Length: 323
Image 1 (cartoon, one colour):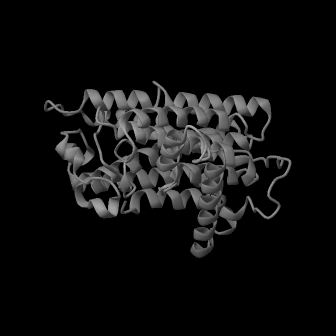
Image 2: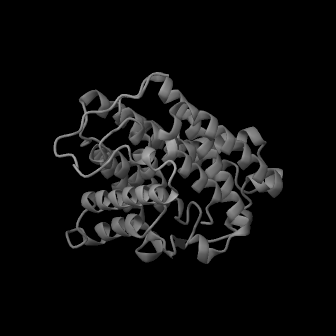
């Protein structure tokens, strides 16, 4: 695989940012934690910039949008954008727009997922869900507006026109019927009435519902750095394993976690008779599947060497998290 190419810094790039920080921190966990912390701060700042003023009209809609996005969260998807871009020495300021855009799509999906017509959940990130804090109609509009804002934000990426088109296509495909929305539809079809999916069907469902945005996050960071086909393929293998691992861990936490720690209602998958990995193969086999996926992530990142330290760390975070 060719050595990754450095992307040219965008005009006005943050001169203090070190795009190789993830690689330099490979042997220092504290330094790596600091890098991830700075990327989280960048993502939060970018989101705060693009979201509408809560005091501007229509205030209720704007407040609902900010409620959906700014009340915490792991920021896993923005972190993946920054970590993937760091492999190719992309200036973080170039990655701010795709990082914010993918989180806006994720937030919109949660707003709609929590609605009574979907999962009917009252708790998200330890706070009332948008339809509870406001109302159902406002929640629907807030989700719609967040989706639109995501693509407007992505279109402003400080990159060449061809790269912006690739970014827009990547996120649109990941969010639509061939990705997240398609996976959600499969999930609805498989919920209740004693339906139990086969393992291959369950993995396909979650490769769309959860995995598509994770793959898009990794791909967008690499696209900003001009990654070649071999690099994109390796990163896609990593992201596919990561997306599935994220969901397997989610299913385990739904059984073993508590609502206060999770920040959302625990045990709702069982209550709704959803197909999950523990329900299908058991907890022990689900944990063994996590070990297999961790090995797959490690193997996919081998060509990048220590430069992939941040991506390795995010893979561990997905598997070891308690919320």
